[in-house]
Length: 115
Length: 111
Image 1 (tube, chains in turn yellow, green):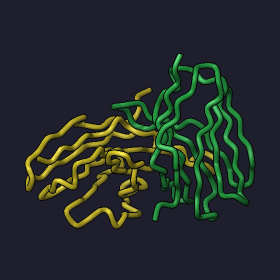
Image 2 (tube, chains in turn purple, brown):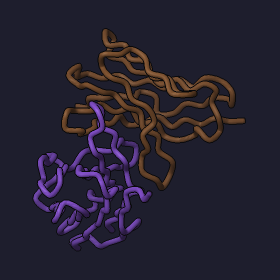
Image 3 (tube, rainbow over the protein chains, first blue to last red):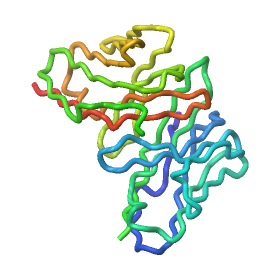
Image 4 (cartoon, rainbow over the protein chains, first blue to last red):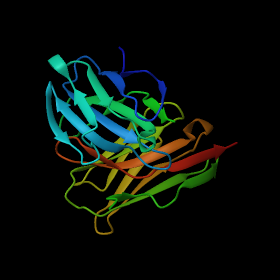
C-alpha cells in the first residue's frame, strides 16, 4: 500500500539550467495533478492528467514548463531555463473519483531551489 | 483573486480545548469543500470534506460547518491534541477535481 512517490525530494540548480521531476501515483489512480507551493501560500494548481491525456493547464504553467504522463502511469514535470522565481515546492497528487467527491492524495513534494 | 481566504495565519490553543479554523470563499459554484492538514516536509493529507448541500459533517474529533449565506466554512477540533499541530488548508473542489486552496493556518496546540 504505497502512496504517491516523488523524486527527488530536493533539487538545487543554477539559474538557466533544466530540471526534471518524477511522480509515481498510487497505482490504481487514473487522475494525476501537479501543484506548486511557495512560502506562505497554499498549493496552486499547475496541470491535470486523466490517464495519459493532459486535460487542463493553469496559466501559471509557462512555456518553459512541460508535463507528461506517457502510458498513463508515472508523470514527469520539466522546467527549462530555470529562473529564481521557480523556487518552490512542487507537489504531485493522484486520485480516482469515489462517489461525488474528489479526494487527492499528495506526495511529499520536490523542493526546488534556483540559485 | 484568491477564491478561498484563510485570514488567520496562525492559531494557538491549549491541549484539550477547542480549535476553530475559519475559511471564507467567494465562488458559490463549487460542490465540495475540503480541509487538508500539512506537516513540515510532507505533502498535504486529506482530513474531512463537506458537500455544498449540507451544513455539517463530523468525523471523530473533527467537525466542519458550512454557512452558505455567509460563504463561510469552519473546522472544529475537539479536544485538541499536540499532534494536531500543523498547517491546515481549506479548499474548494471543482467538478474536475481541481482544488483551490487557501493560504493555510498554522495551528499550534500546547500542553
